[in-house]
Image (cartoon, rainbow, N blue to C red):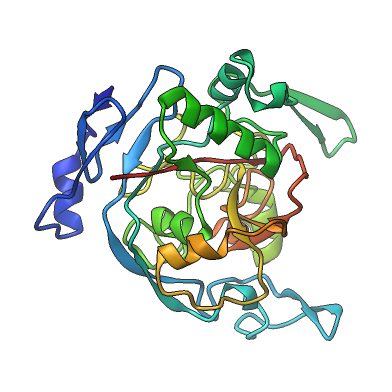
Length: 322
């Protein structure tokens, strides 16, 4: 199945594309850059990304979080200190030389359960309740299901999902993104803190407004603190390429191993090659509903063990195109 993407002509003009790359999906349908397709009824909607290059990482001053590790101890430093966001550097150019499509959305609870009900995903039924303690000390339980992003899935769980998805479609093409592919998709041709600019509103992303206020030291009554993920089609949360919720909502897992600084690999194919390892701490990107604006910057990085499941973490997939 194939769907045209609204506003595609405007988007193509914005990236000054002169020729259109064309690819075939499993049923033989032809798709073009920035078109959306879906290869089965329960498969994720995918958006074909243009080939190109970008500057990966965050420059000094991109992050305002002054709480850093210095000499093995937590310390508060002035904004602009080179220790802030040190793992987001050195800045380097990356060429996207493997054509891919990326999930328009995070994988949803319903999409995960389609896998489980089909005998896949290790038959792991994830928790679908967000537990929070409010300011009065009361325990709050909020159900998340349907088109909410799936949570409580580990890196190993995500591999089981893509194995099922490849089998469902009859391809060997779906996988987790590397963090270079993730950042390229998140930036959508921009180099600002967020795809929408250097600031976000609560209509553009789901993040923790109160945490943002505390970190900046300034009142931000304009920002919301929802403290739960929202359905993937909620909010005006898409970037210029139509990819939603790359900042906020749930932390997104990648296949890349965490390093304290970038090795400077110049191509997405090299990034993919370097992700082929037996075991490591895997990089997570995008921040979540419980993190402040600074942590949902495009360049912000996190990490976790491969077997860790969290109510804050989910994932989206990429598909290699031919």
